[in-house]
Image 1 (cartoon, rainbow, N blue to C red):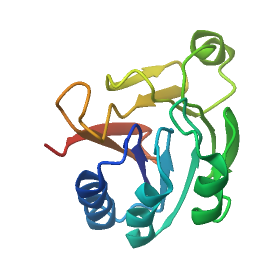
Image 2: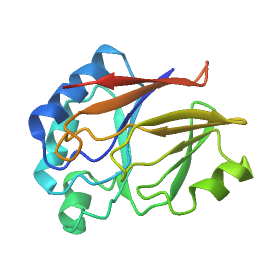
Image 3: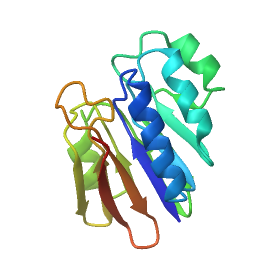
Length: 160
């Protein structure tokens, strides 16, 4: 089972659509968004996913009511934990307590965003994923990640 990981889309609809196409090609069973959609219209491309998505609000998501409405409540307040595919997953936007959460070894996967810098690393039993920025506005490089829940590995996918 694979999951897709995306963050910091920042209204870049063409790249969000590209990410959706890749997640569909790779037959992900779930997509996790680590925040900073920005405007509600940036949610609509996610409706093209052939799986469900879940996410958290980021620091640039000001119109929370609109985002919540168009996502049908799939965007949660961070940090948000849930189980999927037998794995305990924590998703957040900012990495404030990241070191303590990793040290706790309470989660199989921790997903975060905000920094726009991709990170894929295994620390103990915890796979830590920051997919970088899908939007590509800050760093000039658009990336997402795809994780394999059976192997507990992830790969970074360059969109632009």
